[in-house]
Image 1 (cartoon, rainbow, N blue to C red):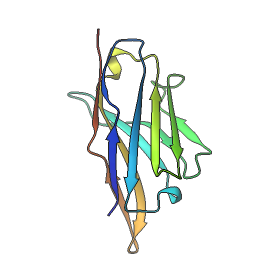
Image 2 (image 1 turned 90 degrees about the vertical axis):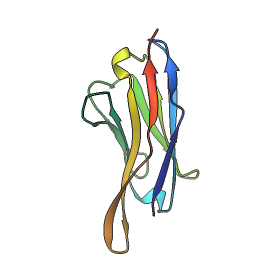
Image 3 (image 1 turned 180 degrees about the vertical axis):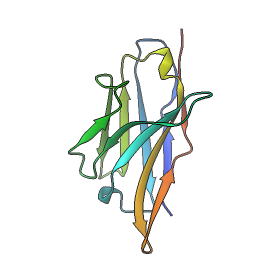
Amino acid sequence: QGQLVESGGGLVQPGGSLRLSCAASGFTFNNYPMSWYRQAPGKERELVATITSDGGNTNYADFVKGRFTISRDNAKNTVYRQMNSLKPEDTAVYYCNTYYRSGGRWLTSWGQGTQVTVSS
């Protein structure tokens, strides 16, 4: 069973930076793309960024382009997101996500989420 565990959230002032990590286990990490989502209070969960299995390609939502960077270390089964120039509207619970094949089926896995609060 695939498991994802996020860490690195917290309280930061506007303009500040945070680095989130997501450690994966239970599936062949370097075979599958990874994504970060976020959910703000009262809003639907939205896609923030995606990285391919080899880390060679990334995609970002327009609202984070130029400020957030997604990366991965396949030797450590970990995906990262560096967040710079944080804004109050970035306040949300951030989740990592993947889909993988197991037992002939495609499965999805979500982390428990990590809270990021941007406030002065």
